[in-house]
Amino acid sequence: MSSRLAEGRRQTARMINGAEAMALGFELAGARIAYTYPITPQIEVMETLSRNGEIAYVQADSEYNVLAGAQGVAWTGERCAVATASQGLVLMSEVMWEVAGNRLPLVMGVFNRGLKGPGWNLGAQQNDTLFMRDTGWLQFYCESAQEVLDFILIAFRVAEESCLPAIVAGDGFYLSHETEEVRIPDRAVALAFVGERVRSGDPMAAGGGNYGGLMAPPKYSRACQRMHHDVTRVAAVFAAAAAEFADRFGRSYHLLSPVHHHDAETVVVAAGTVCGTVRDAVERRRRRGDKVGMVKLHAFRPFPGDALLAAAGGAAKIAVLDRNLAPGMGGIFAAEVRLALHRLRCPATLYSFVTGLGGADVTPEMVERALEYMGAENGRPPETLFLYETGVEE
Image 1 (cartoon, rainbow, N blue to C red):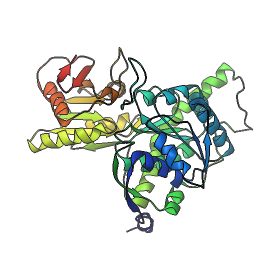
Image 2 (cartoon, rainbow, N blue to C red):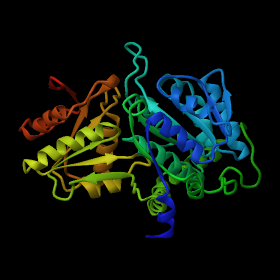
Image 3 (cartoon, rainbow, N blue to C red):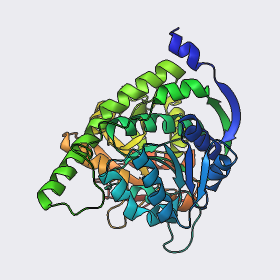
Image 4 (tube, one colour):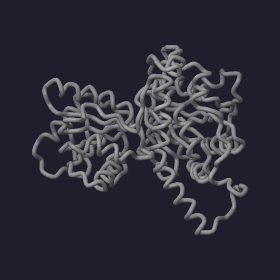
């Protein structure tokens, strides 16, 4: 056993929910300031942080000002705890572009919740974070409270090494409020993993920095190009950080996690808490002798297209289960998967299933219905299918 792993195994197992795990992640990463505005279902994150006397707790008057204040903290070189959800994240959207454009390594926790549209909704839906997909923020999606805590630590490391902000997301209520056993690292070991706050090497600081000035089109274009290339390079930064995390704490993470994929003829791709349901359905099928596998996506930005091809490219059929919807286009993860597989010339037939909107339950039986639909000879599948308890609808 390595000395790092021996140190990292000094972990305490506790029964906590995802909100508490997120707060602990910020504490273990050395955040000394928390900016907050209450919104369901993330409020328990900040309630937990407010009880930590070592963290300066700032109550802003809106979510916009939460991120504006946190941006100022990041400019000073300090780590800041920020968490939000749904309408709160959308209200932050203007500042999201500034934070990424100024290459500030903020880490934000989000518990996904449906946006106000047909009506108010408090259930899980990933449209809030996916609305921010073009801002330049990295995005990581979690299945469990353990992953929430671990990804907060990894995200700080990756954000500061790449000078890019990061979102760590989990399904609201399913993850934020349900309790499970979480292994909590020793504070000193966790802080040693995250490291000292990186205050040099900021791409915007060469030759002196400025903020809020007008940029000429050529300079603006170059800055956007550089951000694009840096986001694609994050895969290598993440791999190095995750490898050290595994060495220290014994838990291994990748941009995606495949299960039973080597001989799979059908692969189901999903992100978030629905992955547990998919895994259960896949195991049922495997016991019956069906060659079915799954891929859990941890990352949306950077999108792991090459790794996805390696994990699922041998399958004849690929299903993507999306807890989100871009009206007129379909599932957002499915669109990214389709684009990546097309670019890499993967011949698999893709089925896009939208399900669980507004926090509706997704059961193993529903996943079974999706697999049955794929197994039938229905010709070319529609661009988008809707998966309900009652069946599959176009």
